[in-house]
Every structure is written in C-alpha cells, then in structure tokens.
Image (cartoon, rainbow, N blue to C red; front, side, top):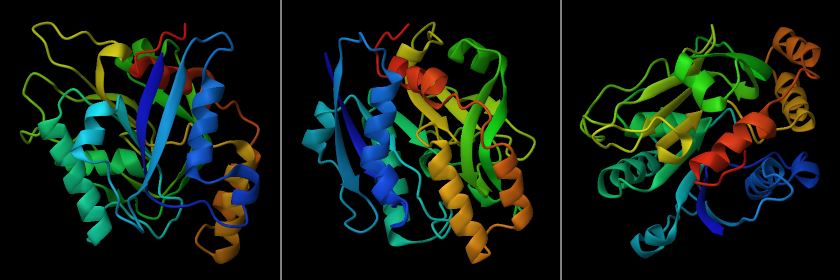
Length: 274
C-alpha cells in the first residue's frame, strides 16, 4: 500500500538549523516515517511544492492521484497567514477551490497550514496580542478530541504568535452536512485544531472518514529544533527573554508528536496503525 501526498511548503527552516534538522520535506518525511509502527506494511510518496518562491501547485491531473494535501508551517515569524500577499492569497484561493471542487481529497494543515485552511473556509487568522505559544504545550481536548486521539491529554510542540480565534463560520465552502468540529484549545489559543468528516446520512466521526484535519501546533518538530528557533528569535528580539526561559523550563516535557498525533495523521490517511 502506497500513500501519495502533496506537501505544500510555506517557508523554510533557518540556515543555521537546517543542516541538523533538514528543511520541511525532510522534517515531514521523518515525522511520517517515525509515526509508523515498525511492522507497518505501507509506504508513502511525499511530493514537495514551493508555494512561496515558485508559487507551484499540483495540476488538476496530479490532484487526481493524491490521497491528501499536507500544509506545512511557515518557518518564519515574518510570514503571517492573514497578510495580503500574492502567494498567501493564491494559497487561500487554491485551498478554497480544492474544498469546493474536490470534496473527497483529504486536507491536513499544520500551524500556518491550519490558519490557511481556516481562511479558505471563511474564518480568520489574527495576531494574538503579542502572546507566543512555544515548546511542548498541554492541550485541553474536547470530548471529540479525546475520542479521536484515544487519550485524555496531549502535549504538542508549539511555535506561533498568530492564531485562529474560533471555528470558521459556515460560508458554503463545505456542505451543510459537513460541520467543522473543535479538537482542542488552550487558554491562549481557543482553536488548537479542527476536523470535519465526509458527509453521509449518518457521518462516521472516525479518523479514516476525515476530510479536514488541522493542528495549530507542530507534531513534526522535535526539542532541539524548537529550542534552536527559540534561541534565534530571542536573540533577534522577536521573542522575549521570559518566553524563551519558559520554553527552556518545559523543553523536556512529553512530546506526543509521533506517538499520538502522528499515528492520528496516518489514520486520517486510511492506514490502520493500532
């Protein structure tokens, strides 16, 4: 069994960190591989598309061959999903078109990708009053989130100061029979993830029946990369010393990136990793 995924890359990892951790293609390849059980009988193809510098996208023919679109983070605090920039506007428009015209294609959005999908659905992404979420962060799971992830609590690596403040309203992009559901929240960011299920007379609220799956955090990030980004951003003055110190205090906290969240992504892709 081979799963084909288009990876829409919305930025890059800083040059000082990429020799150790790689760029987004390497990060997501490692994340997906590490989330699979050793005995899993599945392979995957991850095709990268640079939507920033090259503004490249899968063709309609290619879209027919993919099981999912996966949206990366931006990698830079200078890239904001709410900005009126040609490449961001095109990404939002592309996403809205896919949601309208290809209702069976799965979408998985991470951080910036979560925010872009929210915008495509008619929601908003806004600055969070200067508040950062950084490092391993406990999420308050909804009842559906607990059911979906199969656990009572989740920690996820975070690196953001913009957020989606609420679930997007119904604007007609999705059918009335496909509502969005909240997966988790924190006191700083109320929308930590969204999910929708393929509509049917009695839609199954299960991961294999998922149409849209998003997370505000970074399940693909590891401690060393996060702390490297913290060091760079605190040194530049973008992030306060207090925020950096708090991230350092929590750096060794449990990270459920692959063990819980990565396996959930594979279930969304239709692979049984139980």
